[in-house]
Image (cartoon, rainbow, N blue to C red):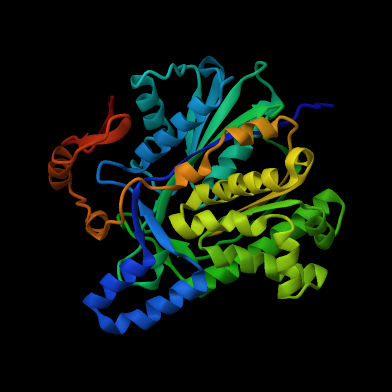
Length: 425
């Protein structure tokens, strides 16, 4: 029997600095059309969102992912680039129909002095917001199955959420990237691959047609699909664990959910706790508060929906909060990673906090990462919303844009459509 453990060794986060509060965005939209304000205010109240983070003009999704990968590598003192065997991206914000995001990231890192090997496998997984989790499970399974000792993988969960302006979906936009170190004997969270719960259906709750920069979402229907998939994946996980769904919930010390918007994840767990444990809202909230769940939702309210990375941003914040509350008692606690991808699929993964997790969590500075050094910028936000799509106009904008030192950037798009990147020292 293979007694190897696999899982997450560390988490690196990058959130772009462009930012706008929903208060200021709504004021701007009201100036354009006063009649829209009540509808937008209801959407803000129902979602619990507060702000949007957006990329700067020179930042596409490859750039965000590269910054997250570099953050992960730099904060992990014992990371050995020569042992990296897998580099995978989970995204629904592709920059090419053929070339994976991971390949662009590999090149940018290598050209900026990160000594990644070429003897690795790079690939991309697409399933709406669940691509990162599918990549995580894939690499974990390959490391579990074999390979040389101490080999690792990196998963890039990176996305830019775009919706049509002056709609209720606009307020849930966001952008960000989370990089996961995947390893044997993981430093942060060991995963139980055998009990993973799944649910998948062919539905049209959310999609982005080819050629469209904006996603299409059926709000209430998407919420229903999320909840149904949650319950089916929980049932599947419980069956594979030899327990009831209620017991699976009760024995979980840390919950990390995909957070399309703050209140959606909260309501999903409230409904599950009511159905399987008979808890009313007050009892459910007390149950979740005791497990630090509410703290995991706050970053999403400020960043907006970062799609594939949102569940791991939530996980990082839950682990930090539990570290603060439980201290040295955190190792050994049971966590549940609950990842949803519209269209749809749900994955429910049981994990255990590792003994070495404390020193890893203590190295994080999530507050600094989530803080933007830039002032709120409605002009910059509107520029992002109207970013040119044709290469000639975009190249002109890029040539006129200042890039801060230490930044990766989209440098230009060639006449044949190929994207070229640059690291600014």
